[in-house]
Image (cartoon, rainbow, N blue to C red):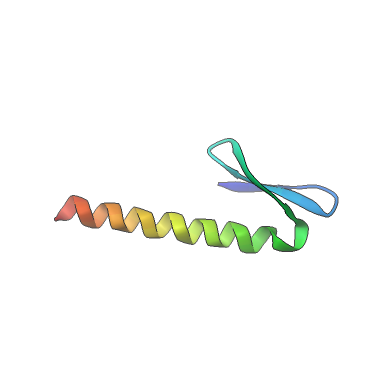
Length: 51
């Protein structure tokens, strides 16, 4: 998971693939939301493994 920036816009990248092209002002927020979503799905899977 990462971002790449350019002039006024950037890319949200996941597993080497471009997920979204966003305005620069929205990049960090989109990255944060994606990371939170990944964390949530990780803990849901871990909980299912336990039960």
